[in-house]
Image 1 (cartoon, rainbow, N blue to C red):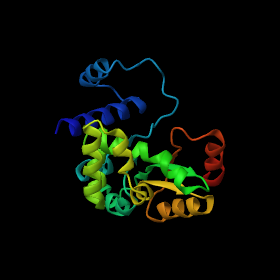
Image 2 (cartoon, rainbow, N blue to C red):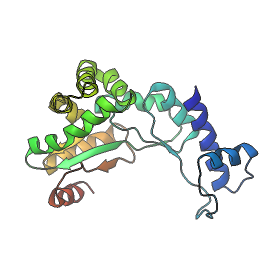
Image 3 (cartoon, rainbow, N blue to C red):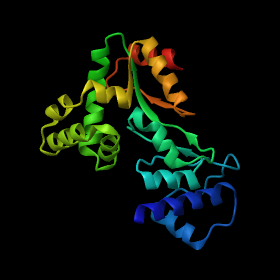
Image 4 (cartoon, rainbow, N blue to C red):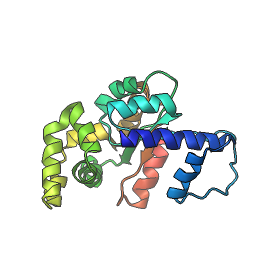
Amino acid sequence: GFFRRNIVFHAGSLRRRSEKQESSAQDEQGWDKLATVRSRKPQRSHIPIYIASMGPKNNALAGKIADGWTPIWLPYRGLRDAIAEVGGRGVDVAPCIMACVCDDVERALELIRPHVAYYVGGMGTFYRDAVSRFGFAEEANRIHDHWQAGRRKEAVRSVSAALVHELAIAGNAEACRKRLSEYRDAGATLPVLVVPHGAPPEMFMKTIEALA
């Protein structure tokens, strides 16, 4: 489809530029359309390309043309299956995972819920489809229906603790370290951790210190 063709085109163009190979006329036209700055000299010979795909076909595409794969809001229970879709070419598995280290688990969940509701309910179909295909279809549809109807608070309240724990790392330091270790055991080679918006500075630092 259109998006797959564009991913392949831009990944190939980036590689040719980073490796100082001759750019095609199509490359130039594509970058001009994106208003990309083209005058900077690459600082290294190879720039790794990571693709944030979610569905089976694009996961397979990432395995063929990318150096890394960065899924976002992928349920933990589906990680192994999604990695199998990417394939075994040695691609970095770098899931983007929201993390919040807090002794008050409910406080951590409350900080993460709005993010889940926004992506599952309001950001197209990619995240809702990913959550749905790994066991949360009914909940994902409920969140989506509330969000699309303008019932944002109800959408946030519809995000269960079970779903948050599948999509994020939340709890005390020991529990969060254990969960991060489970992600690595499941195949994550380069987990990318993101602290939720609204977390106070002390919680931000506690998360970094516990999981770095």
